[in-house]
Image (tube, rainbow, N blue to C red; front, side, top):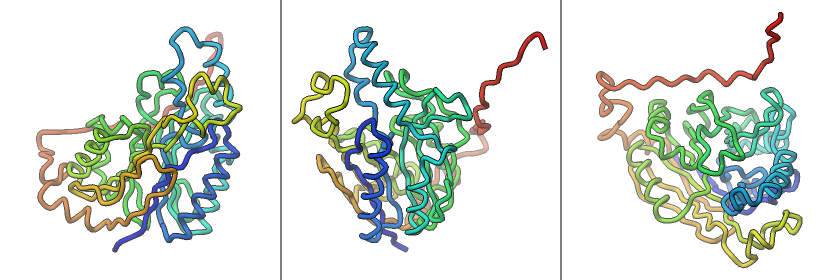
Length: 315
């Protein structure tokens, strides 16, 4: 059965969590009014992907980088403190599944380390899954800690079985395999990557995994960066496209059926049918009859990363 979905690539209010949540709720309202039962947002949408890290001079902008990071930490999401409650309440009220990327600060872990996280919120408002990016890419390691595999899961929703990998995690074959092995219907890839090469990768995954693939970056121009952003005019040109967005929907076994939404600050709509994913795996099921489980074995340690505890060696 076809279900309408929405992929939002509108800009956040960079480094402002409260304002970005308000913008998120506005987009959710627009998508729900259009009949969408699944709404997807980009990587680190709350409160915006740290695109500045690709522009800071290594070793030359340390003070500026530290100042920006402080603002980011103060505007990151603490799930245990209820920072996602407004979005969860919306999902429950409108019986909508929401997938959203965020900077997460875990007060139960350290209260300082940030994680690149994506959550799946169910139509009852509960958080069905929280996945932290396993391997931050290049300068991202100056922003985020390493995630664990506790969220490397596929979960049931009324729209279908959903799993997520963040950006270049989609280039980790074993991470993909871990999702394929869980009867995935919809593979969601919130990202900062875009363009033809990324779209080709999403096509490959749709064919390899026999699943729907939904992906988007954030459509962002220099003029979308708030004036309060430290040294904004040095780091960004107002008229440049920092990211084109390029939201897409790819059908099982490959083929873009919606998008790419290129250089448009809007919402891409499409439809998905879980049964189409399952049917596509008749000839190629890499986690089933085509997987040769008699000779290949994948073990995933899904134990959550424990909080660091101080033990006095003197007893």
